[in-house]
Image 1 (spheres, one colour):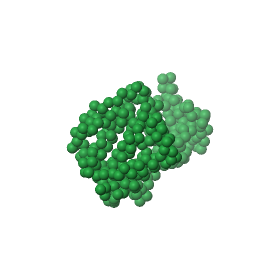
Image 2 (cartoon, rainbow, N blue to C red):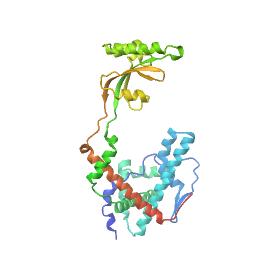
Image 3 (tube, rainbow, N blue to C red):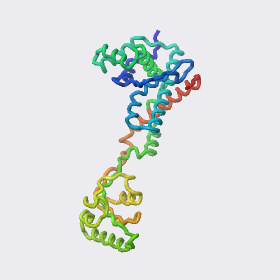
Image 4 (cartoon, rainbow, N blue to C red):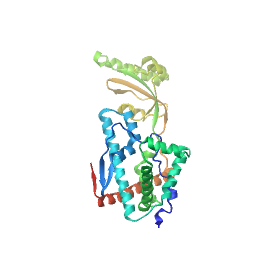
Length: 326
């Protein structure tokens, strides 16, 4: 008899990701299979790991090389093995509790995949499996276990359906940056080198002061920058465009983000040069009120609680298991 645990499995199908996409299964030349782990006497092979990480590995190979590629591959394979071990533990727990799953659940899931990914063409689906050295029985076993995992998680991971207002407010207070838009300034800048090595520091400082006086007297900043600035933006009237924090050197950033819209700085001496900054415009930096983000915070906290409960549940399964990795 089917236990009540699986009465709502049809609703779970929509949440399961398809294990089969064209080209999704990894194929490597001269593959040598072997045992990656033994979980309570049941074997997990390296080929199972390759099936899981195939698409991710191809992406990594296009992005990295050498030692960094080796490091990235090691990490994704270790994570895949951990996931496979956890899945094996969950399936074993399912069997130990003597739950059952009708075959038609797996057939229904397979038919959904054929309809959604292969236009209902079963022959194309079968040929794709064969091309990937993936048998129909392996596919069904994989889907069977995924359905079990989803159902067992639903049974054993039951977070609260609501979060206290106090916890929501505390999270908001400690993570205000998450709800604050990126602060930027539209900056113009004039740079006058000190030429200290040539003994001209005093005259260059006097020039910077004269430039600042001209601007204070109403001269157009952009025009003055074109005449006197000696940085790469001179021809653009000293226009650096929109900048966010951590773009400029610390002292310049501090001045730039302290200026109001349309304001000009005093002379900033840095690294042997003299700078004059003007903020043409500002944007961002506003924090959404708690009332506006309360729902998002509650959802995040519920997800974190579900993750914590799941990890505790899996930790309990691992503690009782005999697991060997190779």
